Amino acid sequence: MDRTDLLLWLAIQEDIGHGDVTTEAVIDPGVVGQAFVFGRESFVLSGSRPFHKVFNLIDPGVEVTSLFRDGERIEANSHAFRLQGRIQSLLKGERTALNLVQRLSGIATLTRRMVDAMAGASCRLLDTRKTTPLWRALEKEAVRHGGGANHRFGLYDGVLIKDNHIAAVGGVREAVQRARQGVSHTLKVEVEVEMLQDLEAAIEAGADVILLDNFSPEDMKAAVALTAGRCLLEASGGVTLDRIRAIAETGVDFVSCGALTHSARAIDISMEFATE
Image 1 (cartoon, rainbow, N blue to C red):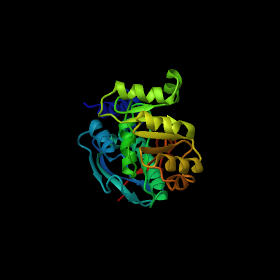
Image 2: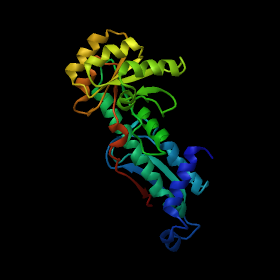
Image 3: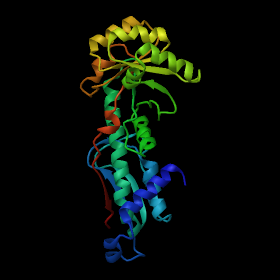
């Protein structure tokens, strides 16, 4: 069982516990039926794989059919999934499976809205590590389904020197130089700066990417001009749907947004049984 399967199994156990007392009391074990899952609003789908897996873990006899692919937009009231199997099994998996696809589709939908707002600008939208504990792989996959790109997955796969690192060693230049000397040449070194005055020091020290933290659009434009292509620039801090177009048009290479995963609203998605 891989990490995601274990997460799903624990989520199922959290909900079912020692048994679904309502379903087991009301529904006979052998009764089968068909159900459909749909959104009460339009959304970008994400979470199909874990949705299928929840029912597979509960009852391998449940047949789940995806009617759309992850990353596709689904209009309100259009069926996203069709399920066939024992009604007890469908009801036991309903809440956990819906929680997953609602959350992940919310992330994909917000990401798509931001990507659309940036259309035509020569920069990419990135996520951050501000994810739900243990859900990172799923939430970052949802960002990709929405058209965004992933920043580093953890502390292990990229150097990002933040304000506390800089404060601990006494300056941007010293922090970048230490990172350059201390990690493999295959890892890019990114450093956060909060003022234009630190930009040149970061470039001269050998930073590959500079994160402009909470810069105004005017200061971002100034940073682009000062950098003159010597390294990549990432804008971060205060990124909202209303502001992202103006940020993207400053000429930065990337815009990173923690709200994609920490503030996306879950989509209103329901499951209903087919009636004859």
